[in-house]
Image (tube, rainbow, N blue to C red; front, side):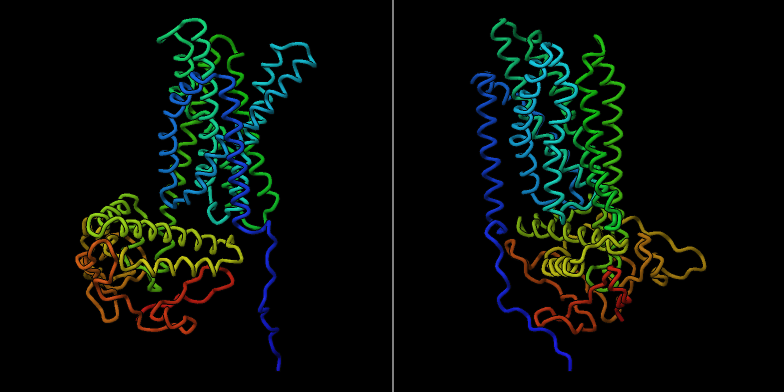
Length: 498
């Protein structure tokens, strides 16, 4: 009889440089040293007063830009540590690389050509775009390689690149505004006629989105590469490079606009920058709506398998309904319950995206493990999240639609979604208040938060118990439905409830 090789009882221990705390410590130390060095360099160039004035003015657009990118990431919010890393990399490491490399290249060109004015122009239009965009793209590359689970599409690339560029623009604005203030101190100018006011208007009022706009092109390249299958290795390598080259070209055009004449800046701004900004804004919003549509189309498979309630795909595919669910949980059960509902929404969204990648053959070898992790996370939060999602579903449900003549009563054609009015297109089980008659073994109505106490979740309604128990689950996980895997290697029919 054939036997399996014994499982190693003592697996090899990773090397010290492979440990997580070593990598985190090294990265934190690198960013901290970069921050201290860039702080000293900027303060040396602007002086203490100029540094403080520049800091106070440069921080103004940061909350607005961060809120905009966080809003784009609300469908499947990434972890905060990724955003903190990207902002810190842009403000510290990328800014330090740019200052040192730009200064060295400009001085070398001026010495070699004996033309300081030409060296400054060449440095601004050629050297600076290449150096700065490459330094910012390094953060996107690191997240793409080492946080691949959090980098799944175009929106993730846009958010990662935009936050990195926001940090870079923050440090650069401190330098420019601080130097402008120092110039005004020497000339005695003040008010709207000062260099500080002009610099603030151009960099903070008119073009706070300039650096994010450039680097977002790199992020889109990485995002499309993340959507590519494993077979297209050349495409996955060329797309980020194409995005980086486009970012460099747009940056060079922006920096060189002053060489196009007296109104060159306004011409480039109105004819190129604003339309590109509008086009990219439309693209990321369209992609965000597409993500919501993916949630609505992929989650019904888990409804049929018994993991989700019938109304949850509709609720989770609406940002308004999600917000209502969190507000309801916070109002009736406290911050802890609202946090659990937000986590439930995020895990369900990740599950929908994972299933879509599995159907299209883009899932990695850890598909089954990741799917089980997400389903377990949903199951542990179901008693807290379902009352809130049920309330949001009732609050956002469309008005009932009368059945067409000859099609029977509402609910008689569950596959058409008549009882809900949502048009899900899958056979739904009983759910109170949505036009379905209760059936034995169906979903029990979800009770409100009345018995939850002071923000501590406790079951207030009969738990969902499928009529069958899958064999592979341990004792603590019994009564859970089977996994409706979408991976090509797991093509088994989805189990239906009786």
